[in-house]
Image (tube, rainbow over all chains, first blue to last red; front, side, top):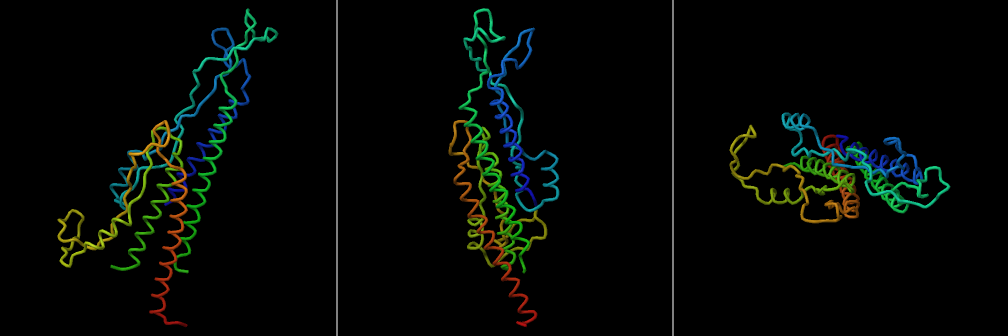
Length: 151
Length: 130
């Protein structure tokens, strides 16, 4: 009965995570010591969120079929995040001999974070969050209207 | 066929449609997702115009269908797979979805009003205007 609200809620959760990851990328846009690999500091790698449609589990579908609820029960439950992956594009190299992480030639490896890309991702996440809030409100007001039947 | 029954199934269809639209908006940026839509009004129209007088009574869904009964159809979900909106194989048209959502909730309000007036009529015929 509350499926449409749950679907929007799942998208809101995913949207918030996207925003968190984007913020983390921007905050670490110049972090040169992200990971310690084989005795060497590696800069922060840009992170990305992977999403997939969330569908009903086998058990839920089976139960629905056994009870034969209202007609074609769609197997959709919104969206879910399957993981956060790291962007494998090469790091930027900047000439800065005074930096403590500079190598022998005076070059520093900087994170592969592109600020303009992050801003665009963040705007997209924010707009899709708004769209989902609108969908949630619309579903909620429909349910409230259903309570008024017969008055 | 009673009006309340039809209105009931139309409300169910509208609620399912809201669910499908929410799902489309939730997956607006999921790679490889195909948008879906709900078909109900066309099926209902077809069913209502193709009724026959001679109908076999079925007491079990496995019985053979005789004639075309005026039974109210179920709404069905159809996947749209012939369009492309984004490079990642996703075909959710967010503007279209938002419009459909506005449409659908207005339609739902209309149906609830209709249902309320049906109940009011029943109440008048039982109690009279007092």
